[in-house]
Image (cartoon, rainbow, N blue to C red; front, side):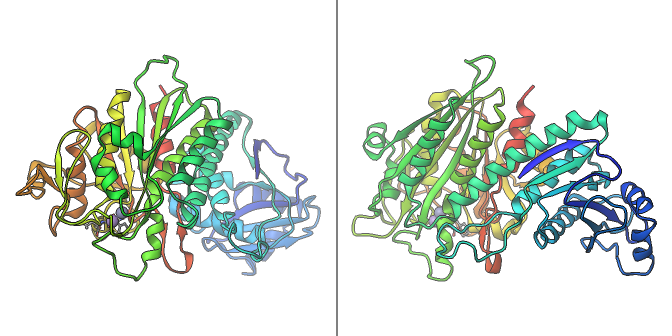
Amino acid sequence: MKYSAQQCAVNPAADCLIVGVFEEKTLSQSAVEIDNVSGKYISRLVESGEIGGKLGQTALLRHVPNVTAARVLVVGCGKAGELNERQYKQLMQKTAQALKETQAKSAVSFLTEIQLNQRDLYWNIRFAVETLEQDSYQFTQFKSQKTAEKSTALSEVTFNVGADDQATAEQAIQHGAAIALGVRLAKDVANCPPNVCNPTYLADKALDLAKTSPLIKTTIINEAEMEKLGMGAYLAVSRGAHNEAKLSVMEYRNASNPNAKPIVLVGKGLTFDAGGISLKPAADMDEMKYDMCGAASVYGVMNALAQLQLPLNVIGVMAGCENLPDGNAYRPGDILTTMNGLTVEVLNTDAEGRLVLCDTLTYVERFDPEVVIDIATLTGACVVALGQHNSGLVSTHDDIAAALEKAAQQSADKAWRLPLSEEYQEQLKSNFADLANIGGRWGGAITAGAFLSNFTKKYPWAHLDIAGTAWLQGANKGATGRPVSLLVQFLLDQVK
Ligand code: BES
Ligand code: MN
Ligand code: ZN
């Protein structure tokens, strides 16, 4: 989709005009102007109740008298006043669906007039772009009939803005489009089935990205190299799998000071998590192909970054691995030696994410990071605690936690901080090793974070548990692309 912003004429030429109407039967400013051109055609329909203003209600008018555009889409905006971002996104989704029913190729949106609660025009347009792009997403790579679902004919949207707002609007479009690209690519990788998307597939994606983007250099660490590095925990998880584990490192360097310390993003990339010898139950096990959504989000962010060319140094790492049972698989009771020297007693082979991550978190010390953020579908306990709407946030540094909370709020990609205090470490005591890999029944999302914090002492660190937010279940089963939007917002905020 092509997006642009400009001050449009009252009666512009386009295949479709999009205007708002409120529940109180009042029209938005441009709708009034178009209504005047049409000799009150629209307001008469509103008066008679033919067109309603309930949030997300839509009415498509064709050949409105004296209106140049062949169609006018009237969108219900609810009660006049401010909409929250969720209502606004719902409204945008309905708009996209209504447009899908038409053959309109170009549209001019006057919904830029809709006032959002504590949000300015930038957010009005950025959320519009993000929502329109999300709505047109389909994953048809593995369908033999690729045309089964209806896709939109729309290819061009112009946002109507005042001349003074043009620059702001263009920036909103640029940011929204880059985030949407990152979200789409993260979804594509995440939705890909585990017989195709294995650690080597992730590595190939990382290598391809470096080929198309001169600011990115990719390095792949294979198992032989992990062996030399002493990554005993990571390798143990991979032992039951035939597909080799691969750690993909994407280095994006574009800070004005080339030696500026990098921001490091580490994504859990379990391309399938069967639980290992502590095998998971069969129900919904297919969803464990999504256990690489942390890595997918890192991949999405790196793509968005390459598009935005932000003046930052950012290193994106995907810790690719499979967790499967096998005669050679690691067992409960095994004691592993991690890369930083700490030993870990395995009490449950299904708590594998933290084992893959702990060695990766030690590995990234070599970059002398400004901050490290890991993103992982780490615990079912996080979903129990926070549900599917907020990602869990654990951090040893209040300022980073605050920056991530702010980015989450801004981007409407929600996250909620969980406490991390000394007591939780006590749950990880082992009789036989330095640490146990599970912390007992209570506070599982926190004890998982507490486990990781033993490996992050050399830099400021935060952890996002996206077990509840990375994909949807049921009829709409599919990756969400979260938390790409949160992370890109965090990076945008880091640009001084
Ligand atoms: N990948 C899972 C976490 C998960 C489970 C994410 C369900 C989303 C939905 C992780 O590797 C895991 O199995 N965690 C265990 C930890 C437990 C053994 C301490 C869990 O949450 O049950
Ligand atoms: Mn597991
Ligand atoms: Zn897992």
